[in-house]
Image (cartoon, rainbow, N blue to C red):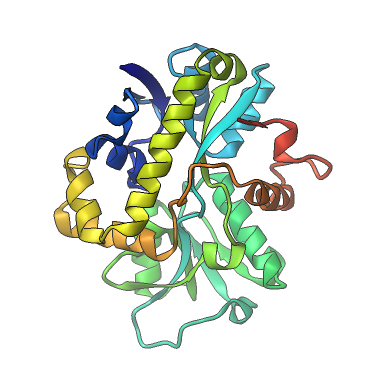
Length: 291
């Protein structure tokens, strides 16, 4: 049995790897997974790869850019997510649901602490709707708790927020960012090229097991998925777990194949350029190899 060490957040967004463990799909490929719990900073998440503490990093391609800056040669070996889970929400107050063209001039309360990639996806979505941040009014500065409370109270017209937070009894999701931005390689598994060359056959088996799991998730019911992964998320109630998994399935968060989608990489390069996270003349593939 080969063990692959993965640096990632312990998050429901990464259900496929836990489902693969629970259903024995990784074991069938003679692979076990061990998870490195970082302190949540980019420095530590990326540092785990730099130090050789892990084999794989699961997260945004932005981490790969950071790895390249440190002198490493990052390679994407599999894709996990194909959407951002961020949304625009409105209050459950009977107001008609807004469409993207209706956002012009609207006041958007911003939930704090979101990664810069969330802004890049939002910027890209706005641009595809013929809008920019100059066409809306952003309300910044609330704490996470206050942002929800103040929006529910009546501040702003629309709420830009993480999908899990938006599943609130007084909020309704009206515009998933993914529906407008299109499919993006939101979360990928990356390794340094030296690890990919040394453990290539193991990584191929890993990608095969992940692919099998992703197809299983696409075919199974929400109830079956929740029952399968629940032991990995004991801090969630069964009801909350089912609500979140159902939402993620509704927006197509999880890729249905582990194969890296190069067209999505190209779209994401455009979005990151627009969001100021990638130089205009560069593509992600200038920094990230594809196994």
